[in-house]
Length: 295
Ligand code: GLU
Image 1 (cartoon, rainbow, N blue to C red):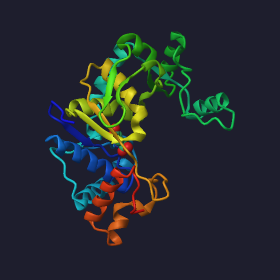
Image 2 (image 1 turned 45 degrees about the vertical axis):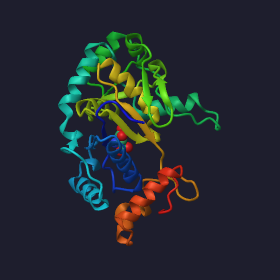
Image 3 (image 1 turned 30 degrees about the vertical axis):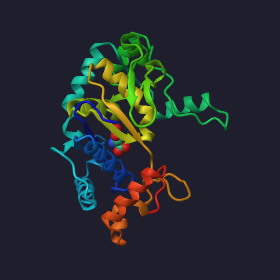
């Protein structure tokens, strides 16, 4: 497929641990798509979470491992921890549009409510927020805010739909043109007191700011794409194309677990596996539904 615009892809790891084979596949695929279309592939470190992702040693180790494997990127490395001002601007804009509401539920409350709703043991639907704080009376909201009750900011997806309807997005890899129906998306959290922006907000703001025109990422993020499309709609941001790639599986067909040390690049390197073997294994995994012979 030839694309009639300049292609910019990105590899956007969250540095929560060592670089592993799944990361290499994501980076390799983003690089490959950029190269096929004569474009650029950027590197963005998604280190918004305080704690481990901010550890400079973890980030440096990831960068060293990427370089050792031989994966190269274009332009400056962007770190989300340095981009919080841009997320605050986007949040203020959404708040001014009346699209955000504070959610005072604790995680335990949300989980208990969820478990109550889906008590049947065979039911294990994806975790979703019920919308409990969406329609709280204004005076109660005011009072809680004035008293400093801890809260997160959620986006009201019903209002989003009233505003932008059901826009389209396109996956060039597998599923083609899709319709985003905001009202069936979760009212995801966009910010918390201790976190200036959630993954969803930051990724959308940064993809637009960096001029990413083709978002290549794992199919585990497929469910997030309608949320991102909705945010692009309300923030009037350009809409990239998407390409969701397969995830790695071992020869028994099980998905790679990030905590599994045997697929960390450092582990493989220490056991004498070469960069070439790693890249070949990743390449052949992509062609074989994700099956990888290296772990
Ligand atoms: N930072 C995310 C991760 O490491 C990927 C985000 C994205 O590609 O949209 O899983």
